[in-house]
Length: 115
Image (cartoon, rainbow, N blue to C red):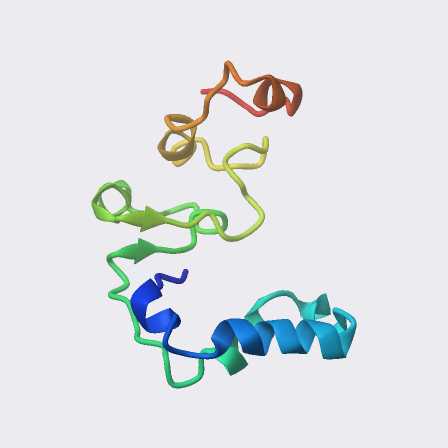
């Protein structure tokens, strides 16, 4: 997860660096995702975030502590068991579904699982 200080961001040339890479690489640089270019571009500009602030693993750790999830500022369903899929962990699904707007036409057409 990334949290950006936009004031500091604007003092760097990171945006120009990304744009230059896009023009020079014909987008081939992005085949492995956004992480490799981001690691290069943000070298020296990154600070670790307290793990309790950002809870990872909700898409692959079935035995996630519910109280830890409740305390986290950000929860991340990384892994295969996304909460909107039938293979999602039922006890973790409510943390996601409480924010879903089921009245939205697009959401209804996606057949997202409700709890």
